[in-house]
Length: 181
Image (cartoon, rainbow, N blue to C red; front, side, top):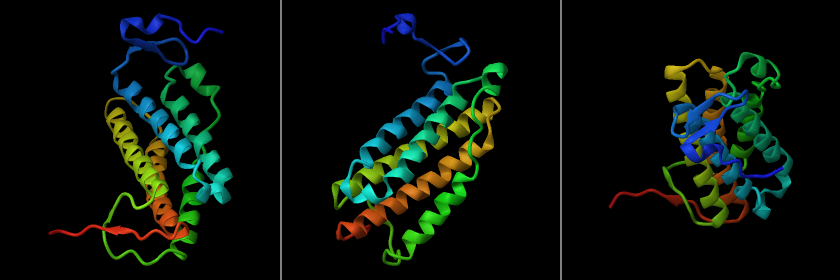
């Protein structure tokens, strides 16, 4: 199979089911940003400090791929063939965050991203996740999407913030408190 098809040379891309949309369409922006988030998450989990949680984060990557598939499918027959989106994942996120919160110092300040490469990568993933959430909210204003997708991204951004805090803790890196001059 060739990777290039030349069908997008006119500024359009195909959804699952064949519908073509302009590449800057709000739906394409939504699932494209989810794809970008997945790539940043892939970079984040390459840090050794997250190796004990690799399976957990790989599951998140799989869910993000599924989330993107749901966003990229408008054809009802194609949509019916997709695996359902796992709405229980947000409960698993909350459980993981609660466990981490018991280990890390009490949060007393807003934090600046950085201090350690893994912490910075977690914050980049968090920021991209917030953008993906905003793109899905924009899409939901003009078309119907499963509201659980937005809940998932909202909770995932919380999880990525908590991941940054966890990484500061396990790498013994001081968190950078935001201070005004």
